[in-house]
Image (cartoon, rainbow, N blue to C red; front, side, top):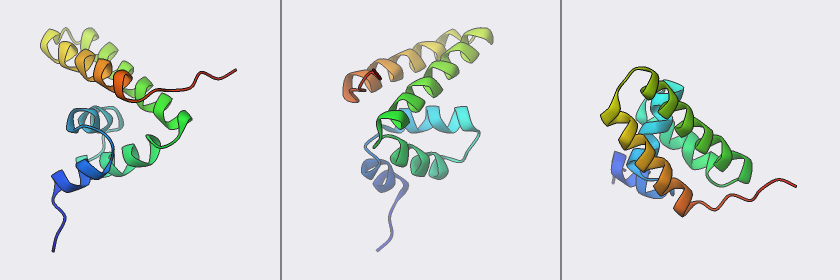
Length: 90
């Protein structure tokens, strides 16, 4: 039995869109972004790093004037923040 890309995404605790944002930010293939994201999402610092990646992607998309992609990324960030409750550092 083989794992599909969707199987890997499902096991990562991230959505496909979140994985794609990591891939875009890091310039990685989707499978490497799944691996990195899966690792990061399980630590508070890693969760914050993913949040920053998505925020960086939004800024870059805005600078390029890509309104549609910016809207998608903002939706990705909203979903991410709703589903990954990051602890604030004290």
